[in-house]
Image 1 (cartoon, each protein chain N blue to C red):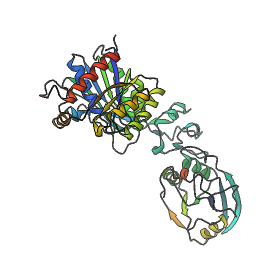
Image 2: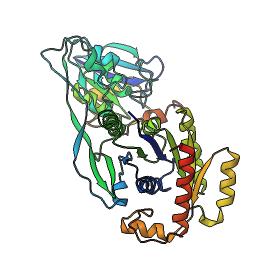
Image 3: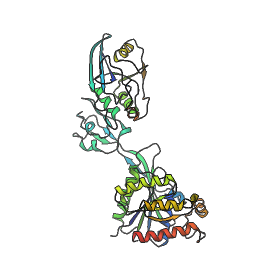
Image 4: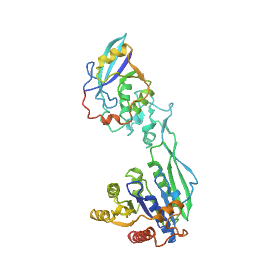
Length: 303
Length: 135
């Protein structure tokens, strides 16, 4: 059994072009005849499917656990409340504990340790997972239900689904690309921790640099290999200084993508820049930069 | 008989000033009222105050375990409010920040305190005032 190569596209700052890079890398792998799964782990704003002009299909629910106390079985011992890390169970001596659902993390500890099995799972829908495909790329998308906060549960569900696919369907994919949310929180951490290679997409601004350094701290904690892509590199003529800056900080660069009208056009059309069927200028600055990045990636990742 | 819990500073007591924070107060001063007179005063340390989260729920647990049926508070977070409501503990709001336990009890007995049913600050607001001087 050969496991697929997992590439995580992240970057710290929002709006640097993570999704654009993830989608176009997926397209380029597909162009080489590889079987690609693209996973959208930006569950609060999943929009890979928009760039691929696709639809969210095959909706399945993702549930999370809340404790429900069966009063007849409860011996009022308070063990659940004593051990709840988030104090989501209110227990007054000699009475039945009261769940405070807003602070429950869904860890199920209470359910597991209750000596009289008085705690049942009260399953609530926290979001959804969709599957679809576009341009011969399979897409797996997670979406958090608006008003819910525990997005990491959806990301975990996506990774469980990936595990299932790699175990049950041998060689279904050669490459898996994970597109993360901005930031350095649990959702991003979960995806980076699954990856063989991490690509951090940044932009030549102070914000871009600051957030890049933050995400690199996280990547180092997780002991993963990474390289950076500088998007909008021609912005304000700041490119050389920024690239030098990264070099001085010993941050390896996979490549840079200049501002290019053709990229904007591909966005509007809903056809990725690197998609072969798209009529585009094959000598355009964006097109060439992506080819260079892909070559560097193949070499780096031994793909 | 009513038993009122008031968040207090230091070791609490009738002459201590009310602590503006419910979940993160130093002590709860419990005052028992019988026939419109104070029959017992007892202070209990709030062991939950230093924790990173869930203090409103734990503080309510202390209040509930000492069988208080009323509290007088200033700032109250959403989890504390939910917890107090779940235990059907009446919540009164102080009209001023500088009052002592004794003064608050007098106001309560002359029915000059307003009832409240939900929190009046967001979650974790009590943490921000952690270093605020007491007066």
